[in-house]
Each structure stands twice: as structure tokens, then as C-alpha cells.
Amino acid sequence: MESELVLHNGGCYCKKVRWKVQAPTSVIAWKCNCSDCSMRGNVHFVVPHQRCELLGDSDQFITTYTFGTHTAKHTFCKVCGITSFYTPQSNPDGIAVTRACLDPGTLSHVEIRNFDGKNWEDFCDQSGIALQSKIQMAFTREDYH
Image (tube, rainbow, N blue to C red; front, side, top):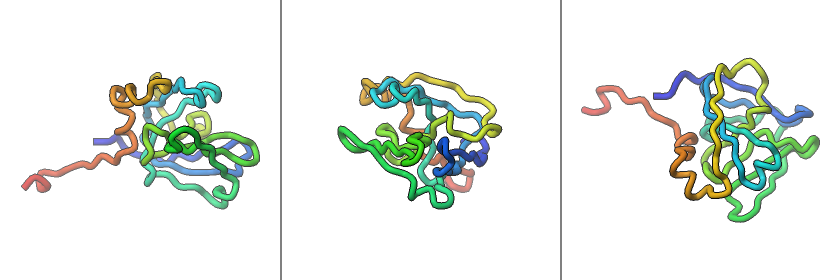
């Protein structure tokens, strides 16, 4: 069962891109060593796509960069260039939220783990990161009858 979810707000540097996500107050964040993340110094946590929402007219300020398999969607602000969230290759059904782009005050604990993005296919299964974009369901006794 997941811990209680809270609303986290965040966005880019110039505040043209703003969003909110539902996630626990304690998260596992990933420091990735792939070519893109390592150059950006990215540390992110993953949430299900259904728990993310762009606010206002943010979508008009977003552009996307893809490469390789085009599974990952590296979104960034057209004005300030900050990637405050993106769709990771490890979790194409989720959103990777850049930890540094969260408004302060809603996270109580962040455990940072290293993600071997240079060898992501092998490491993805070992890390369990793919489960972070899945919505866990709580079952009652009645569900089993």
C-alpha cells in the first residue's frame, strides 16, 4: 500500500511552465548517469502520468527533444530552457519530476539512488524503477471473495 499522497507544485525557472503532481512526502529520487541526465545534473522521482497536471497555459511554453528510440520525451521550457519534468525511457507511462524544480515545503524525505542510465536496459529491471509509474491498488478482504 502506498503512503499518503500530497500535492506538490513546481515548474521551471521563469515560471512559464507550472505543474502539480500527487506523490508521497517521502520519495526515492534517481541520479542518472545517462548522457543527457549527467550533463544536466538531473535528479528525479517518477510518478504515474495520471497524477500530473500542467497548470494554466504552460503547454504553450513547452518543447520536446527526443533521440534514439524516441521513447523518452525530454520536455523543457522554451523561455528559460529548464527541464522541470519529462517522460523517461524507463517509465514511458509516467513522469519524471526534477527534484530541484519542486516548490519547497512538501517533501519530508528524499532517498537518492544511483540509476545506471548508461546500461539502462539491464539496470531497469534490477532497480525497480518501472514500478514507480504504476498505481498501486489497495485491496480489501471483500476483493478476495
